[in-house]
Image (cartoon, rainbow, N blue to C red; front, side, top):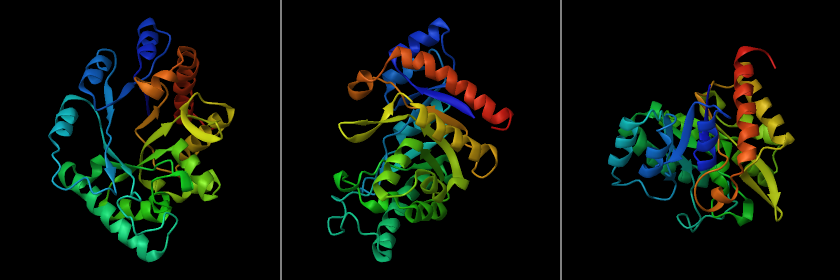
Length: 274
């Protein structure tokens, strides 16, 4: 399993100095940022695609085709985000079988657009950080039954964002471990990891990892190591970045301390028992 790190200028400086090491820089689909990052490490691009909002019909894939040809990005990712705006007649908390079938059908059609163009084996769907009544997304977006339906019907893989799963589990009233196990982890292709902290009473991801976060990650890697879950090709540490929130929460000291710890943890998870 490879380690990717969000591109940030502090991370680039630390890599240049030899203070940290990892396999890939992770970037959004921004050509200038891709160009900067690839000078030091191969680039894995994370796309801002969304299923469940009616945005796929007639869409051109030329930009993504170019990125896939120019970088070693393995998968085209998209987020499962059926919204209240797109389904105005569905209550946010309605998980009835009829509504699940309706939403799943539309999401499957949209994911299918990518699968048809890129091939199902190259498409992965990501779980989102559902926040209950404060969210603009339907609760169905994070129901394991819907995610399973999408994966099985389209043949695509799962991108498990660990922090997103923990946020969703909290608002659904699930144990986080049980919730992750209920997802289609036998189709796991990629993992995302960050610290999770409360800021103004709200669970916030993309932060420095705390002791509880490391414990959850070790548990996840144990499921993979013991063959209970499929082995993903990459773990992305989504800490730090460029612009807005990410720039405000990019501490070089955190990167210097936590990236080597992650690199070592991945090696140990693949070489020996926990």
